[in-house]
Each structure stands twice: as structure tokens, then as C-alpha cells.
Image 1 (cartoon, rainbow, N blue to C red):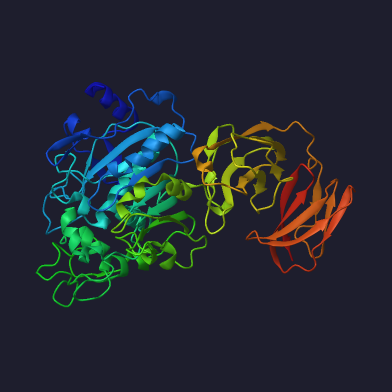
Image 2: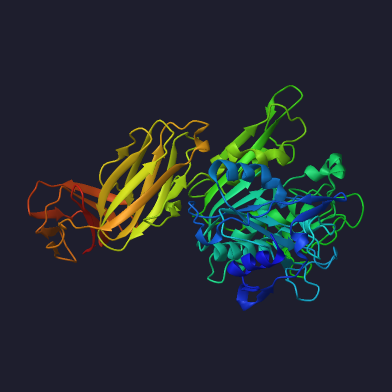
Length: 581
């Protein structure tokens, strides 16, 4: 593929500049095209993963609700994901959308730091043009030099997490521009999970509409509580710089002074023999500007002290290595298991992070660096949300794929997808390619009530039709007995909607009085059930009816306030809002 074609692909989806916070403009730094495709590793040129030039860009349509953005960890690169994504390409026919390259020490000065972008003088962050296309997944890469070549020699992939979060903002915006999707899935290995959290938990990093647009965060071997693995003498053989900003931010405690790491747990940016003293020599770190705002000596609010969005689907994957006695122990050799569990730092999450494990039978030192290659556990963590409140939004009359995996703490796999209809519709649900032995599905309204009966699969298919009125609904798909190989074959599904031609039982319906003191009358209506919910959606009561065209509901026991009443026939339903005096 020649340079002209690459430039066309880039121009097709990305303009030369994009809007950053407060209408600041990010300008992409130019570089030779050959820098994009090769990494200089130990004086050897390594070819990097490339987009498929024959990827049929104009006709590509992802069958995933949201694109995936992979972020690597400390002293690593985007190539760490290749084993898993190559599997995705072959097994699921996923399309690689490309890589977003950032140098995070573009001024090559370790003693100062900032979150400014090129071309601001002395800016630490330079974003580079890359050839991208619409795809199912993308990479973020910090293994970049100031000139855009790959294979950093300026500690770019050992830079501050604050700068990584600022770069992820740009990557998320670019992914949404390229794909046309309104949310992304972030997958972070090790420090990449903290970089994702830095983006999510700081509103100044969000998009111009003041939303982060993240549907799921999947942390793989992420030290949510920090890691003191750099205290081990073996770290000298990894090429990690113990004075780097990243080591400073990853610390759970400082080796000599003993207090908690500033980035994660807060404290004053003050480095001396009693504060932030991690090494036996001075200075400990190149700089202590943890939030990278060019002001030293501030009191920092730690990442684990900041609020976190409760309406993101969180998953964590951690490794367990084998000791000399052939026992699995709760560490991957780099990150202790309690540190990798997000729930330990946010115990009040409305929907706790799901935990998945790899129990090594052969690694004695560490399996932390291998976790990005274990696609069975990665597919468990990537599985669709188990709760309707976290459901992925989908469009009707479009084909999608979903995955059946063994979940934790229960094996049953519930997948929720949200959709909307603007008129009375016949919604035809079609699920095929089912490999699990038992699958059920239903359409659920916004109150969590099934519209009609729950349906069971017949062999490898499941089909049913429901008539629904305007509003938001959820497709709930449940695999009750998943196996550890079901993930290899995604199920396919769609919701086809057509305007209902059936008689609407609510056409002549009236209800009165409203506000109501005791009895609510329902005229010209044949229903079999009425359900009452409070304004928050909490179920209050249910009443069954005989087939009569005039009905009433006694609401005298309700307290003063606003309520929803869901009126149900066997195939249709309607929600009315009433005020109780």
C-alpha cells in the first residue's frame, strides 16, 4: 500500500486537527510514513500490526455494539495485544482499525512535566498521524519517540499516568469519529488500566460534551492499589527506570519513607528523606509533579480517593503464579491480587466489578506479562453487561454478535442490550448460531418487567415476536449452562421492527381521575394485569383482571406522590403516569 493510499484512508476518517478540552486544538505531528509500520527494537526492525488495506472501508459494519480500545502497560507497547487480537481476527473475523501513537515525553526532559500537546513549546505530549479505518478494535501506543519512530528511548512508556489519561481522551474521541459509535470499551493491561481510570475519573479529561463515553472498563493485571514490584532487584533486568514518573505513580508505598503512594492515595508533592523516599540515592524520582500541571508542592487527591462512575460495566482479570511447592498464590508476580481487585477500593459499587483468574501451573516468577495473551479470560471479561442498567445500546434492524462465557461469581451468563422504538411496533427477535445447550431470551421494559413470556431456544435458534409501544426496552439473553468453549462461537442476533398493524387495545382507552385519591377508573380496555411502580421504578403492587371492558384500581393505600401504572394485555402493554393525592 503506498503513501497516497494511506493518506486517503486517514483523510477519510480523521481531519488534521480535532477539538480538545475548552476548544483547544490538537495538531498531529508529522513523521515519515515508514515510522508508522516498524519498531526499532535492539537495533532490529520489527514489523508492527497493520490495518488491512483491503478492509472494504466503505462497506464495513461492525457487529459489536461498541469498539474496543486496548491500552498497554509499563515499559511495554501496543504489540503486547497481538496474540489475542490475532485470535479475534481469525476466530471472529474482527477488523483491526489501527493504532494511535503518542510520545509522552516529547521534550525529552525528565525533570519537568506537563499535559500540553504539540506544537505548544516544551509540550510533553505529541500525537502522531496514523493510518486508521473503521474497525472493531484499536490500539493506543506510548512506545514512541519525539520524532514519531516506534521504540522509545525517552521513557514515553514510563511516563506519568496523568499524561496517559490526557492521551486516552484524544484516542477515545478519534475512535468515536472513525466508527460513528457513541461509546467505547476500554481494556487496559497493568498501568493501562490506571490510565483508563485516570481518563474516566477526571471530568477535565472528558469529551467536549462533558461525558466520558465509556461503556465498559476491563482491567487486566491492573495495580488498582499500586505495586511495589520495583523494589525487587530483578527489575533492573527489565529496562525499567526506577526514577521514572510511572514507577512514582505505581507505588503502593515508598520503600524508605513508608507512606502511601501519592498518585493512588494522595498526599503532598514533597520529596526528601522523609517523604516519597523510595531509593537509597537522591533524588528518588526525576520529578514529583504527579498531576503534571507544572506546580510542585500541592496536596494531591489520590485516584482511589476520587469518585468513580457506577454505571460502567467493570471487569478485572488477575493471574496467580505457582510457588516452589506447586501451590497457586495470590499474585501474578508483579501485582498482588488484593491490589488488582477494583472492589477493594470501591466496595460500594452499585454493580461490583466481575473478577476472573488465570491459575498458572508453571510460572514461578511471574505471569503478569502473559495475561494479555490469555484470550479465554479476556473474553470472559469482555462479555456483555449482566444488568439492564449497564446494557449496551443497539439499533433495531441490524445484525449483531454476542458471546456466551462462564461468569463469576455465578456461571450463568446474562447479556443485556438496550433499544428504543418511537411508535407501536412488532419486534421480531431472531437469535441463531447458539452453541450453549440452554438459552432463554425476553424483551424487558424499563421497569424490568418481561413483555410476554420468556422464550427458550430450539436447537441453535431462538425466535419470537412481541408488540411493544413507544419507549426504551431491553433484550435479555441468558445462557444458563455455559461451558468454557462457548466463547469460541458467538451467537448472532437482531431485532427487526415493523409498524404494528394489529388493533391497538389502547386506542379508545381512557383513565380518570388524575390526580386520584383512591379509585382509578380504566374504561374501554381489556387487560389481564396492572402493575404499579413508584417514580424510581420500584415495584409496588400488582392486580389481575377478568376480561371486562371497564376496570378500576384501588390506590388508596399509596402515599402521596407520582406513580407509573403498567397496563398489560397478553401481547400489548401501556404505561401511564398518575399522581396520588
